[in-house]
Image: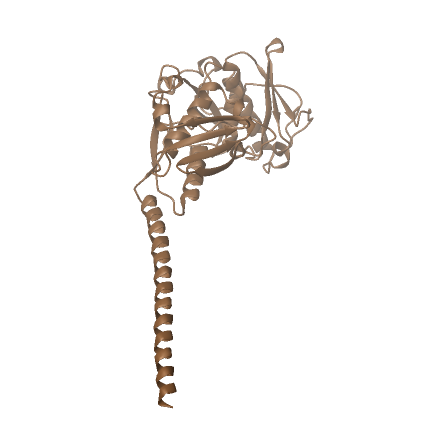
Amino acid sequence: MSFFTNMYKKWTDILSRRYLATGGIILAVVMLVIIAVLVLFRSDINLGFQGQMQVFFFSPSDGTLAPEDRPWPQGNRDEWIFNAMWILMGGPNSNRLAGVWPPHQNPEIEDNWGIWKDWHMDESTLVLTFDESYFLMQPLQEALFRSAITLTMTSFSFIDEVRFIVGETERTESAITIANAPELSPARISNARLILYYMDASGEGLVREYYDAIDVDTHPQQRPRVAAERLIEGTGLEDSINLIPPETRIRAVILMPETNSIYVNLSGDFVTRFTGGQVQAHHMIKSIVNTVLANAGGQVRQVFFLIDSARVDSFHGVPDFALGFEYDPTVMLGYIPPEELNDSPEDE
């Protein structure tokens, strides 16, 4: 009996030691996995708190791209990329810089954000996919847009280059290729000071605001549309109000020099989303008319409105909406004659 008792104890000890060893190995592997995950997570945390995030915008004063510091967002790498693109679309905080995200150009896209479709990381390369309306940008606007994205994204330590994909077209950029790009010579980068009109907070009339737009002074026919697009985006002044529904889209701005007029074709949201009264409607229409004419370079004198490509007889109590509107000095606070509108604000 003692023989069987001794054998039982012996095998029990062997099995217990074997299970203990196996359990120890499993526990060690689990601990190594946990440590590896923590190290990777910690590396992301360290990346996320390396200081201010630099987002690049256009500097009109010297014709170059300049960084603007923004607080580093919380989250993972995908969220950092998304946040940086969102800031690029929203524009700079400083009035000394100008945004590079293109204005809304394709009526089939709901908003400016829609031009950017997707992204993923291919090792250290950020791959960005864009809608084909990307090609609607003017060449210099596109170069600035692409370069600002590249400089912003390659400031992240985990991105070495950026690949842009539009349909069948692909282009890969890095900070070095952007720095040596001849199309980004300050001598080629131009900007135009556009004039925008918003309603004064008192509701008594319209006030002027100035906006620096990239590469439109060589394309004067684009100025009225760029100005109208910027007008819809809203005012940067605390004492003025944008009355245009933000959902409004400009389907077309057509200059007709032979009839001395310009047609502004707006989406139906302009009518259906407006919530003001007759006075606000009057000031809103005049803000568009005066803005478009102030930036048309004296080519036209009348503005006609179309809603979804059709004439509309009335709009919230404004008479003769289907007829043309001329520049109206009576609604201006601090009136300046049209021929002096292009003067620098410092000269006023």
